[in-house]
Image 1 (cartoon, one colour):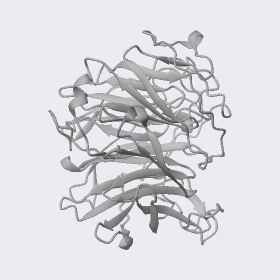
Image 2: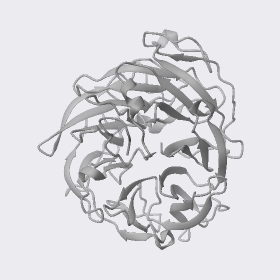
Image 3: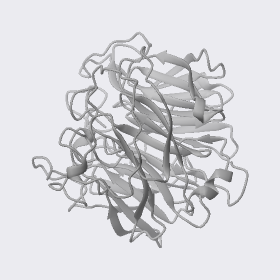
Image 4: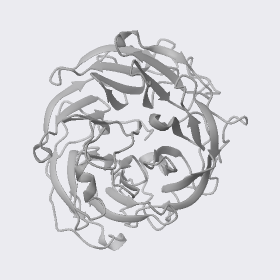
Length: 465
């Protein structure tokens, strides 16, 4: 999502209704707050958004028995030792959108893509045209979950809309690939062309020595896709940076969703990533938003965030191929398009709905992903046959009437150690349980951590990574 945020109203109560076996079409849109879901999904609990965080929940990360949830005003840590009794441990107030989070060891990294008057947690927003403005990465020590400590900031050109962790093979350093976009001639530290990412090196024994070590160019010789200037929904974003990068360090590869381009990267040398393949979809994709590999590293799912997450794209007028997932096989190092997928359930015109963040469910022999669709809810899709992806489970609420129209829903949905966690803009953290023959094998896989943009292979049996 790339629009300015504002404070929203919190409503804690939700109502769980019986599941349904068929996709909910336009005539069957649930009432505000009403829950509908497939019979193989159970709503386990909801933890309301902390009152001290006055803006919306964003992305999530997991480590051990804890979930970390970003917010435009900071982040929160939740105890998930017993997912049915998920509870808030602490919240850190540190404004600066959009606070994408990732966790490694005792360190939490947060993205700030909001021009601030300084790097502190008491900073205020100011115009990016002011030379002294700050944006970039904040680093926190979260060894004490009840009292996280802010220990370091690293400024990056154009800020940090999202970021991706890439540990080195010796686990001595972790690299942060910082993605940002939309430069302007009026921004002193973010002028076009912005055809790069920033790479921050964090020495794990001395994280306060973190610094930018490289700004490699990740675009094609033509400078990236030029886009199509046209009114919504027909415009296509020009490539002026990457929105998000997903790394698969074990396999030495990464995939970048770069506005008008989808790219593959060789990251065997994490300090010098190299583009090895690229693809464009000038017919349907408006904004290449994020990427996910399958476990084998032979497929990539790219998402199209048509309308920036603030439009009602899940309807008959937009159709099934825009604001959707696109599935690509990697064949001889190149990206080969196979199909699109979009949820079939039409949403109300007040409901922002488009493909957004998700992760794999670790099942041997199958490719299954859980994914957020803003107010379209949470969907589970089997893409083992990448030419014919099939939804096998879903969960959604009716229109969120606790906030302005087109301003709610699930930002991210991730699977972690037997449960699905959904980060809802306004309603907090939801915990779901799927019970399906195609996914139940995943219950035996235990992961030590999950940063969705830093994929690790899941084991075929038993214990996790």
